[in-house]
Length: 420
View 1 (tube, rainbow, N blue to C red):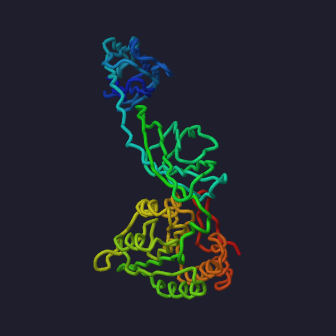
View 2: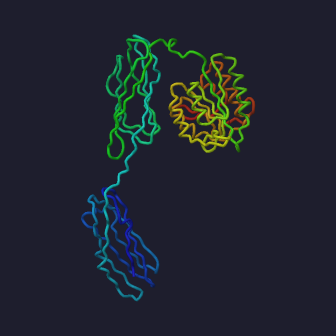
View 3: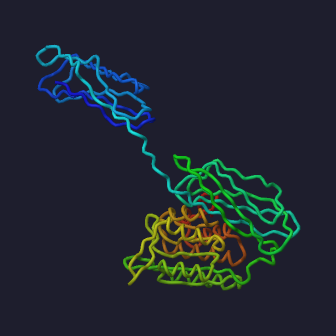
């Protein structure tokens, strides 16, 4: 006896679906000269395959399969049957099964509603000279999990715009950022408001999104708007129980020594850092550089909680924190093992991230920090200071550390290995 099964028996309307037909010998002997052809009703369209199975021999307990691709647009339960289903049983007698029938059930498409998009707009290079043509950029970032398509953005304000047409973008995927430049002629000084309006679509059901932001650009000389006071380097360390971060005090001491030569920098230290202490330090200090010295594993950063117990923080959570500090944090140094996944997330919001793609020996960490902060104190930019950090590792530790594990990530570029 041969049993026929269809899989799946439930398909979604409007979707191309592969249906498998299985013939199984559920009797005790061998069946021979097996022929089966599946006939479909007019409501179900055959796209490929013929649904026909032929085999000379089908032992007891064995199965043979065939497949066809179908599509149905009408919801319902539609009968299928076979106009040609025959075989010889173990006694050699011909068996014809003209009564085979089954149902293919066509169900409505279940659409998963996408969560609303989370977008962020910020002004970049927003310092303009009065009565002179200049440019600023609006950086649009997708900080959520939903892609946006057909993005249209309009910027308005008490400025003379060279081009007032909407800016258009075909799509903005999660994690992506795009800069839109605007050429303007300001005729007043101070903080000038600009209004950003955005429309777009998302999801399978063509849902629409409309967002607005109120931002400001500064009109005045660069000297007039430059922040007063020294740049802050925030050095935070965490050493929970059962972890081995033994070099933080020595590293902090060397950093302080290098920065002391330049009054344009000040260093603030926070130890035994937990989530609350970290956010508090960012609020109070508005640092330019944040140096995280902590234990890391598989991208997680281990801070401290009550009684020194480890508190693992995901890369996404760290990135979410720094997405709110783009006005003042220029560089994040993740001095933790396996912090490359963290860097990939944080670089979406911070211009420079320095992280570790493997383990971080203490002598490498200290040597790199000496070279990096020494160059920074001498007035070098972040990227060049990074290279000086790598050079200091090579100078102090030799060729065994030619490929040191510290990497630089930029907001728009890739990782750069250290160079000699």
